[in-house]
Amino acid sequence: SRDLVKWAHLPVAIWNDKLYDSVAIYTGSATVVNGTVQLIYPGVCDGSRQGSVPHPLWPSCSDDGAYHYNLVRAEPADPTDRFLTNWTKHLIVNNTQRDPSGAWLTPSGQWRMLTWDQVFWGSVDFMTWEKIGQPFGLPVGDCPSFFPLPRIVGVAGQPKAGVSGVIKSQPQQQPTHVHKVSASGGDWYLLGLYEEGSGLSPGSWIPIDQPSRLLDYGLVYASKDFFDPVFQRRIMWGHVSTGDDTGNCMTLPREVLYHVELQQLLFAPLVE
Image (tube, rainbow, N blue to C red):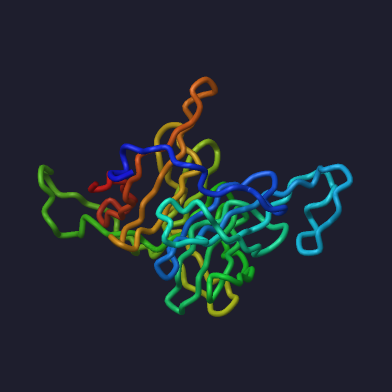
């Protein structure tokens, strides 16, 4: 796409061609690392194959009658390929949770992400990852996300065009981060204060805006966000369930904003 509205159908970007993702590549996330897009996704391996032999590197992919998730990192085999259809895969960890979030870089220079169970993972090089732990108070849900407060709009004291009277809001400490999950048929988010832990400490999380707010209206679920380093903005797509007879689709991409006076997130069409 050249305008993020009209899209052309391209070849499959990445195939599940390894033992550790032989069943499927489930919902992962993309992160730009040193100018290159890298994927982290849960590869689903088949634990119900009759007579399968455990692999020494991923022993959970054996004949136990269940599926298992394995975190996998994929980097472009040819970064000059603008369609990114050839990937080099690296197994991060065997038998873990699904739905890894997009990664973020902490002020101390550590990459972090979280999975479905709201456990943080950390890496200094984006190649080797360690399980850090779970900050207290993060609700569990599908396709989680955790990111610093996005671009701020509606700075207090500025006049609002077309609005009569005075907008009054209760004083509230400005949040530092956003936590998002999908649950109960919708997408939800919490605003809160996060202090990064040092080393392998998950840090502390204090929600300041409970209960969770509905992120989208209607049958929107499993939204995924991506930080655009070119225009320094947070972009979010939503998965729309249009019914059994019509299938599914995606929302148009929108920029995530934080409005100071409303003390909530806003979602605006991209300028494109």
